[in-house]
Length: 302
Image 1 (cartoon, helix red, strand yellow):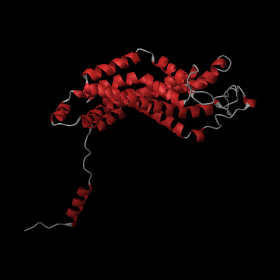
Image 2 (cartoon, one colour; image 1 turned 120 degrees about the vertical axis):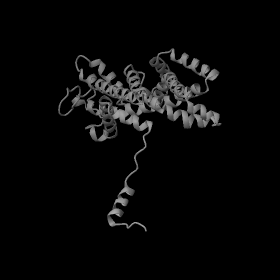
Image 3 (cartoon, one colour; image 1 turned 120 degrees about the horizontal axis):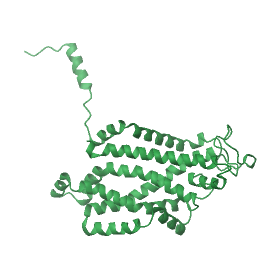
Image 4 (cartoon, helix red, strand yellow; image 1 turned 90 degrees about the horizontal axis):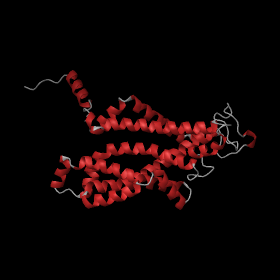
């Protein structure tokens, strides 16, 4: 004799059917949980998000056009009309710093992506194949790395000329050796794992091995290097513009704003103060975020 199904039983069954299955835990989810428990990492992430919003909505935030020159308002100290003051051409420094956030973040992102694809690819190839391939690639990278990054970037700009594409290429080539070495180390950490050896034993192709097994498992470390290099790219870009071998006027890049104000350091220090603070805050935020990612992806904390 079958059991009678009451309305209450049917209601309970429907409720259980709608209940979501428990979310499967993955290394990436566990890393994100550890990242959220790190207050300094969240501060860095919050500042970076604010900077991204400033870069996106720069035309709405900036009260003036960064290119407009007002000779009746030259060299004015910070005030309600000009929050960060004006420069020697009467341009509003606050507007230039706000637009500089867009230029600095976008150029730094392109520089880091270019370095990741060029140097990172070489590092992955060297780490996976090893032997002679590894030796040749790493010795070439050692030759490049023997030259200081800023000096190499300056030499490349001297050959290619000024401009955003030239600056991206210069920082990419200067960062390529370090990026290659870091990605090689990340690949070597997973190269001897049991699942890699098992995949090789069943005949998985080399391309599938790299794309489906090695890169995903080394992605956490690569993300840490990527975030760290964003700060490095901003520092290099600002340094080159400050010494006159980076971007050219009237581009509102932070290093170029510093270069414009260095002649007035004693009479109008505010011209250098605010762009310098933006560089410091941005790099500090990326470093906090990178340290948080390092702690989150550290296998010792699992």
